[in-house]
Length: 150
Image (cartoon, rainbow, N blue to C red; front, side, top):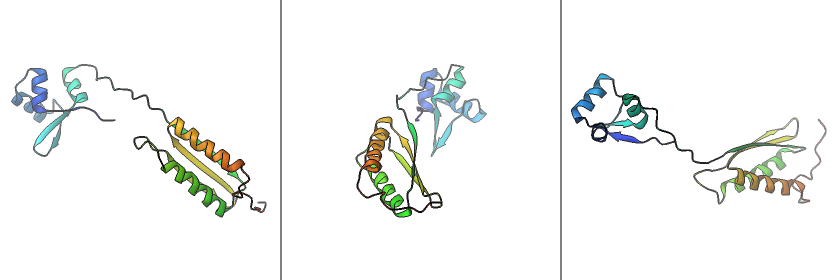
């Protein structure tokens, strides 16, 4: 999350101080600041700490994230690769770039098991889970191979 940053001049104006006084606070360690090039930048939180005010409230963006793990049994390496490619392609197409879906697949060769981990927006995750459900329950030949018993 991005926090507001102020210049020495802006802090001086806000506090009704001289610019040299603010610089003195920074040099003495009374006011924390980050030096960027030849200028100092002060975060809103550090300014609040100097003035003794409660930290400025962080804005809640209203964004929610869902974590899902899907386990598919009876999947050989070839089917796992095809299913993983389908899920990854779907997750990476036509999505909100600010909140992308993150997908990881893990295939357990010995147990013939594929795990798909999905992190992202609830609506986009639900859409991906619906696609996955449709593919797994369809008679499309994706998972029709015989897998030997472990």
